[in-house]
Amino acid sequence: MQVIFIGPPGSGKGTQAKRLSSQLAVPHISTGDMLREAVAEGTPLGLEAAPIMARGDLVPDDLMVGIVNERLGRSDASKGFILDGFPRTLVQAEKLNGIFGNGKTHLKVLQLLVPDDAIVKRIVLRRTCANCGAIYHLENNPPAKDSICDRCGSEVVARGDDNEQAVRRRLEKFHQDTMPVAAFYKTKQVLREVDGIGPVDDVFARIEKSLVDTE
Ligand code: AP5
Image (cartoon, rainbow, N blue to C red):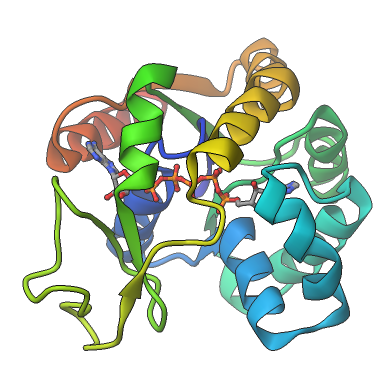
């Protein structure tokens, strides 16, 4: 199973991709998580990406294609994967196509539909576990103990780019650069649109249905 999640910031890509990854027992490959790890470790990639991410802009395509190509080549991705946050530009989509040998894949692309006016509230109230990456929301899905991750007991924090200014820039970039990627997959007839509004369980049920419908 090779699944790509496309959607605006805060549409629930990470939330749903983590769940689908554990259900299908294939790795969840999140380019945002990989970049945040690089930033935390202070690697050359992290140092270059940090100010770009803080502004809500996109990290250059060649860097992104390089890290995804390397990650997809690892043995755990050979039976499938859930890609979250990549491809985000037409250049990335074309390069990914090349990595797959120009379309000989079992790729399914799920586009989560969430209107812009719901996004800012989701993101500004999001909290993420600094250790295991579990995702919370202060209203919809708060941790049981204030600021403590239910799963691993580490601190739950706001992401550096989860402020209103950066979110608005990320939304702009989504419409400008990533919507053409959705159109690209639509012409290849592998795109399924999924309503991303409503309880997380309901959205997940729609995702499962749309994956079955496309088998
Ligand atoms: P990335 O980490 O990919 O951020 P994003 O695309 O902006 O998406 P988010 O992680 O903000 O949201 P999400 O859709 O995963 O939502 P979530 O499940 O957390 O990228 C960050 C940055 O890295 C980019 O801006 C860019 O700079 C760089 N980057 C990454 N990939 C790149 C690439 N390929 N090329 C270039 N640059 C790249 O949910 C959000 C909140 O909503 C949570 O609080 C959650 O609990 C809540 N929620 C989830 N589902 C629901 C629901 N159904 N109802 C109510 N609340 C919900």
